[in-house]
Structures are given as C-alpha cells and as structure tokens.
Image 1 (cartoon, rainbow, N blue to C red):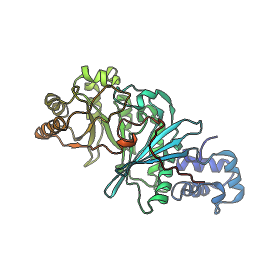
Image 2 (cartoon, rainbow, N blue to C red):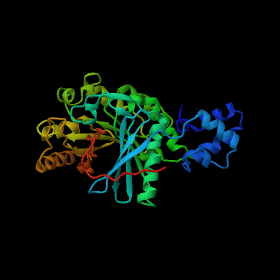
Image 3 (cartoon, one colour):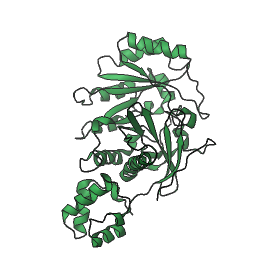
Length: 354
C-alpha cells in the first residue's frame, strides 16, 4: 500500500478526486499530513468520515518506526529507524548553536564502494520512497517536541545512508514535498544534496525548477588516488566531475560545497592542498575538511592535528575558503562516514510514540 506522504500536493488532489471527493479536500489532507503532521486518519476530524474511510483503505499513513535514539556527549542524536520490511536506516540531528541540522538517508545501504565509509560495507538494500524520506523529518520533529520543545530543524542534508542521486526520482520528489508552502515549507536554500560524483545526476539536478544546494564528496586530487578511495571515479573521473559542477547553475550567493575527507598518508599533504586549489580555481565554492572518522571496517587513520592544520592553512593561503568540520557524534557512530545501522553497546534512550 502506497503511503499518503509519498504524494505531492497536486498528486494527492488527483487521488482524492478519483475517490469522488472535490479537489479542495486533497489540499486539506496535504496540509494536515505535513503542516500539522496528523498521525492517523481518525485524527483528521475536519475531513468527512466517508473520505477518511476511503483514504484509510487505499493509503498507508507512516511506515517508519523510531526504534532507538542515541545521544552523544556533544548533543548529537542518532535516530535508528525501521522501515516496513524490517531493515534499518539512520538519521542524525546535529546541533550547532541556534542551528539544528538533520542528516537524512536516501537508501537502505549504498551501492557505491567508497573505501572509507562504513555504509558502503552494507551493500545496497533498496531505494527509500519519497514518503520514507519525508517521514524521517516528521519523526525527528515529533522527537524534538517531546525532548526539546521549541527546538526546530533549520537545515536538511541528504548526507546519510545512500547516494542520493542513485535514487534521483524519490529524492527530488521528497524535496518538492518538503519545500511545498502548503506543507512543511522548508526553504530549498536550507537543503543540501551530497553526491559522490554521479555526473548525469548532477546535470539533471541542474535542470530542476526547485534546486537544493549541491555538495560533492571529492576526497582526492588525482585520479590515481580517487580511483581507490572512491571507485565511482573510474566511471566519471575528476575532470568529468568538475566539468559537470562548473556547468551547474547557481543562484546568486550560492556556492558548491566540496567535502574532503582527510586520510593520513593518502590525501593530506601540502601538495594535495595545492592541487585541490588548482582544481577548484575560479569556481564559486567552499571546502569542508573532514578528518576521517574511525570505524573498524576501513584501513585508514585520521591525520595528526598538525597535518590537518598544515593542510587547512595551505588551502586558505592559496585563497580557497576551507572549513574544518569537527567530528560530531563520533562516540555513537553518528559522524560522517560512520552510519552503518549496526547494533551498539552504548546506553540508548528508547522512544516510543503511539
């Protein structure tokens, strides 16, 4: 049974009309599902009972279960969510002063084989539907209402489990639903989609009328190194990737974000820093430097603090904005590259909401 939150506003209107109700009822239902986050058809009391009964017989209403919440010493929360077929995905809430970023997943597992990433060890399970992506946001909002009333999610990043552009149709559909002013009304300027470098997906995303911010996981400055770290490079090498990014249409004051995971002895030398600046010269962009977050499923090491400082200082000296992303939630395997939906021995807060 398809979930009601998988429909865009206009599609839900068409569906309601097909059930014999006037189109305005579709608008009404969409607003209740998203703006008000009504959790059951029975609670939608301003919709006629007959229509509610027809909707309940035709559409599901929520398929994710919030199975576990872990809280890091730095305030980061990792949500373990079970999908309808019993598999698990993860989403992370990352506080930063007044900002609160939710990192959401787009797939169960991942088909790519980035050698530094824990999610890659899971292999590919399946794509998430748009409704399952949207529901991650709604469940996080409900959690916050319970544990931190008044706190709101300010930014969304498609940087969780999976490669978003491998699930292109559902990711774009979810963005349309999340940004609809009759629903959650999230600004596209506060949504970022991160890709490992699927060139056709970048080209396609650039042609959408609703465009999120673009982030690209680069992680190397030569094809020789990137072929090993990110095997997708063998299909679309650095030159092809940067060509697609240079052609990506940017609105005024927007920049592309390049994510660069620093791996000791692999891509962290001053020479790498100089090549990075040469590759990105003239591009409206910034670089997020991410010291590798250790996990037992990869053979890498995090560079020393001195090596990290040297790399960042060289990039900045050469004129490229470079920001060091401190690990957040690494004590609960919630930091960048650590999401693997594994069991854990750390103390967790279990949340149940009927």
